[in-house]
Image 1: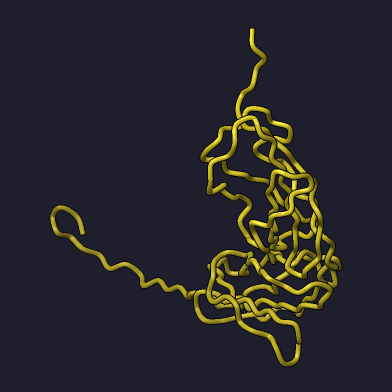
Image 2: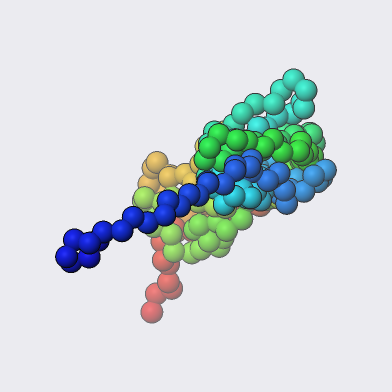
Length: 224
């Protein structure tokens, strides 16, 4: 139509929308299929795209028996990774992914498996605070702290703490406690030396005895 209202009819044109295909098969799994000596917490990851460029979401299935015990642990998530925790040592685990696209088509991926590592004892406690041999620790409000570690990633640790004025310390203050610190609940004696020791347990009960550390209260200097 022009400015003087003259009009001409155009041709009718047509188009057809594309067909729809399901997502590609999930691939490039991590850990790779049949991996061994995996930690007891694992970040599962994979790659999957849709041939039509549609958005893809994922269901994650995980279990220790591929025929009877595969549990859905994630629904309709957009991330192509998923953490699993608290696994058992020296055990087979199985997992697979179901990929969905926007229009309801899905693809079930292959079943993958991995084996977890064996348990090792924890490392001795380290990094004491106050530092071992400190000669100027206050008499009140003292908090003992330390670092525990284990070569098994994600293993949980518990601690026994002994604190006394004799070497080795005999009085137990903590029993398999998850805390890595303890506040001394009473005032200490100036210019007196104290001894403490931290023993470490992992979740399987493996035990590691710690070193004996010491400190002295006050900041004692000889007279001028």
